[in-house]
Length: 193
Length: 357
Image: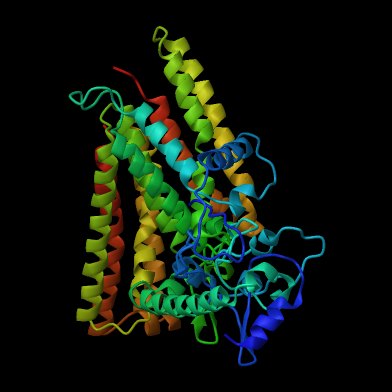
């Protein structure tokens, strides 16, 4: 995933990539997700670092606090990871089988990056949960999660919808909707112990 | 490396480091795939050749298939060579830095993007070309072998759907009583793609229905406080196991009854997968009364649907003429059809009753 930058006509030497450049690329894509507009950056320079960071953050925040309590809290770290990555792979396969002209890793990249709003929602929910539990608490969290869920869908549709012909867009967007719905559900039902 | 190739590539003047085409022996061959063993400095290998093989779409009229192999020769005002690949999913739709050596070959007439600086080093160019040729061969090998295990091109037929088809098919699944013509249209010996005929089986609806069913089951269990994420896996695997069992049983009985039918395995999977739609709907309901009402409706609907669809496949000759079925062989086939159709409601109930408390 690192982009090798070397002087032309000089085979075999690769200058070490500065970390900042990678981080900047990831950050730039984050901005593109937060303010979705017609842009090809996510598609052109795809990378999977961003999705990995987001997935790990989400999984860390979602995992249940104590190992003993099986039913309370939330899923294990590995479960979130598996759900996110298998969901993304399934959506990509579906999109490809439907005949979309987006590549495998591009699709993974877009789906991964568009988890950003939901990660933000998770952060907010965690903060809100520090207050007293109650119906108001739940309503606030519900509202935040719904808004971020809509944001994720809009962001990913802005990138993915163009890859399908118009009579099949809804079919390609539906599994994306399911995917983010599952993640939102996990976020909403999270209760810290 | 053919000297003509180098010359051709050197023809244009922009200092881009991307070779798109190799001219060898007067033939321009361009790599549509992207599986390359890149020389050490190219760290990023392109994605699997696997997806790109799916782009060589066999299925019906899709202009996408044609457009994928064509790249706009040179786009005026296009400063960014990345733009060239935006529309394809097979190759370097990923961007490369301006200084980077090319990841692979591209499309014809790509003398639009030569690499003057790159060509300053003919050895690396040669290595690139050789590497790309190896990659192309490797990709072909992978595609050929993958096609042996997973019939990718056949699968694409079942996904050649569109939104209208899905809507009509869902309507048919819930209300099959008024539909008259259940025969799949053919076009020169091959069945027409699902998007042109609502009677053709597809795999999009069963696949999506299955996934939705698993999620809805998780939801239903969640509202009853019986949820844990491993239950999702449990639901998915048990439903999958039942479906597999059903497919195997039906294939076996079709074999034993020696039915001459053009019902392929994937067709069968598609037809049997349609009942998951009912499963979705029933999982969504809370409350016993609502559940049993919807169950009743879905059971009858799917029974009628299966009978009418399978009748044409299994009882082909008799059904086509519309004559009543006679004779021991035909009777056996009719019983088989009824048995398959009757198994659907039973399985629907089995897969969903534990979701309602």
